Amino acid sequence: MCIRDRYMGDHVKQLLEAEAQANETVEKANEEKKQRLDGARFEAKKEISKYREEEERKFKEYIDKEWGDKSDLRKLEERTSDEIKSIERQYRDNKDKVIQLLLDNVINVDLEIPKVVKGIFE
Figure 1 (cartoon, helix red, strand yellow):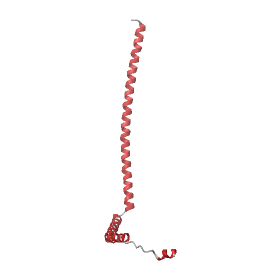
Figure 2 (cartoon, one colour):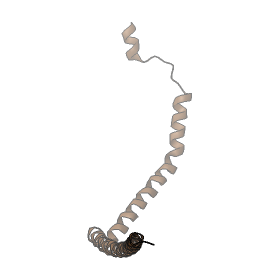
Figure 3 (cartoon, rainbow, N blue to C red):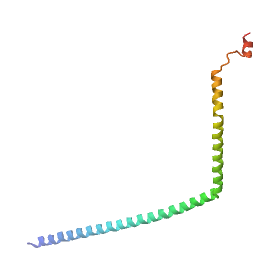
């Protein structure tokens, strides 16, 4: 083997070692990147959870402030319920009367010409 072949063999060996080292560096960088992304995801989830809790607390305070005492809401519900019952009672009481009135007006048609209309044609 001549010097030139040995010299080229050393360079090839150096190139292969450099490639292996580069691959190792890339793998290490990818692993670090993955770890940083996982950490960022964890921190983001933690921050989102904290934000959600704060907004839910604010919303609850707003609802408590706006609606205050629940007795106002209960009074409104009771009054609405009473009005609905009253309307239903009126419906039951007047349903038969209204049906009879409609039937009377449909069945008993007065065929006499009103005086006002007669006066126009005389």
